[in-house]
Amino acid sequence: MSVRKGNDEPPPPNWPSGIIYLNKSRISPTFPKEIISFISPLSTKSRYETKPIKHPSSTIQIKKIDIQGHPAKGQYGLFAKNKIKPNTLIIPYLGLIHFSLTIDQEYQNEIDHDQSLLDKGEEEEDIMKDDIIKRQQYDDSEHESSDYDLSLLRISSSDIQNPWKGKYHISIGIDASKMGNSARFVNDYRGIPGISKPNAEFRLGKGENGDLRMEIWSLNEKQIDSKGIQKGQEILISYGKSWWGARKG
Ligand SMILES: C[S@@+](CC[C@H](N)C(=O)[O-])C[C@H]1O[C@@H](n2cnc3c(N)ncnc32)[C@H](O)[C@@H]1O
Image (cartoon, rainbow, N blue to C red; front, side, top):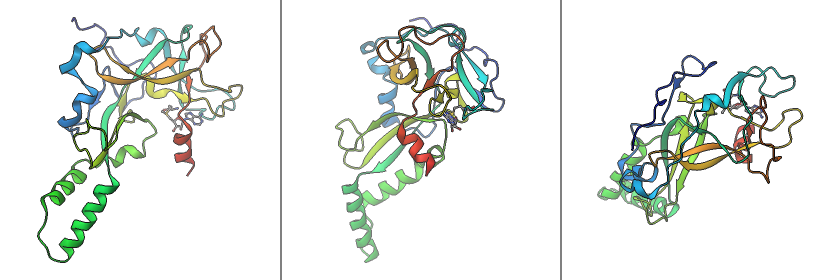
């Protein structure tokens, strides 16, 4: 398959200096090879449909918000440069793909048990060493506080495909705080004067090479008025109650 041109386009107008502009998500250097197939299924490429994306610069633009009463006034937002039809892929959400592990409760109990044996002077078990290595190597805490971090995929510790089955739940995220594309400027619809619902949403999708990714889509005809998103309107999604809940403390 031929490689599409336009993958090396320059940053769009209003792109902030200091943020790396990406045409393709980057995978964190600590991302383990054991789970790469979940997001980049090259070996099973033929199973996936490819989805051409219209060059985003023709449909959207990054603009500074000067709307009175807008809760993100002074910040930036994503606006329709032309009319966008309902149910249309607007732009993929690019950033740094990272992951974190959360320990399975039963496995934690086993470790606590091993630790108590260690405390009593018994010999260290291999299972303990293995666990300590993983927790140190895969510390992901910097992304937890990011305002640009989005969940891509969660794999339960009980999933048979989980390489650490019975030990860890896996969370894969995309963080656009230091690098990304225009999608990182999409705001939430809440609190904006005259707006009562979003006009776009995140959907899980696949890029041209089959890579798993998050995408921003205009809502379908049933969710949005059938005319779609009008030229000049802000693209607004729902970050989800949990996102706001976490930030209100
Ligand atoms: C993913 S960024 C969106 C782009 C951001 N406006 C910018 O200029 O970089 C998320 C941040 O935007 C702001 N934001 C987005 N939607 C908002 C809303 N409805 N009310 C208040 N702040 C909002 C918050 O500061 C939030 O942490």
